[in-house]
Image 1 (cartoon, rainbow, N blue to C red):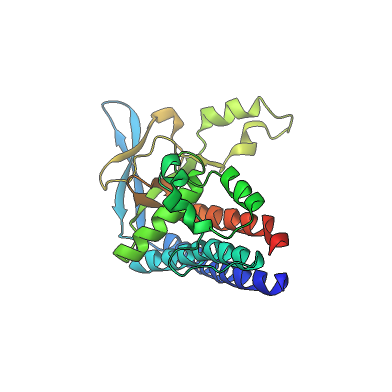
Image 2 (spheres, rainbow, N blue to C red):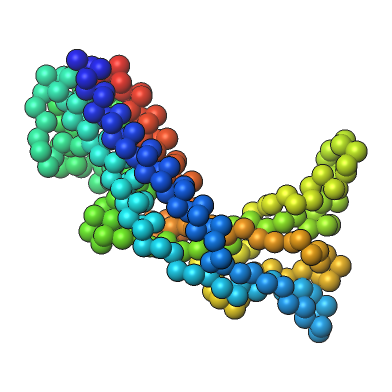
Length: 263
């Protein structure tokens, strides 16, 4: 019987995995297209090369719809887990009440009204769920999953924005990195390597300077990488959509696996 109960949970996670793969494909196609342009302009006064964002097309609405499908399947897998844990304990789950508890803060999580969500679950499992700290300030990843999913259900589309995520390593940086390797290639070993663009503004604004480097650092093949990130103030801003959704999926899968023997 436990295997049958676990199948329903896994089915939702499998569905989420398919949507994640679809999201990965669509983002790849978009980023490989001619939707962004970061161009170099030489500033004769400062003797610096300024890389300026010349173009950044709007993110396709379809991305938000796919993300919403991912979130819903991941979140509902957790709710279904609690539903099945109640049944496994010979209890009767209640529609609209029973579900995986994720609160906005610790006090809300501890409230009697909120604890109704896991009524009928074995006490030792309740303790294990408590240890997950499923609330903001405890397990923020779970809270972000819950909050984004709620927002998607009420507003239809989640907000996303393009982001300057990585840039090539500069010559002086390659030289520094070469001190940490015995490879005979030395600094050339790091030519073409990308590193996070830590100072990039989010969301980026067309016409702004993404990076300013000295004339001596200029290289013809220097370039940037763009990405697509969440832009939901108060929940998650500037974090890459694909990687974040993958983290949600992995966390939910880990939780489901942890309680599989109890179904």
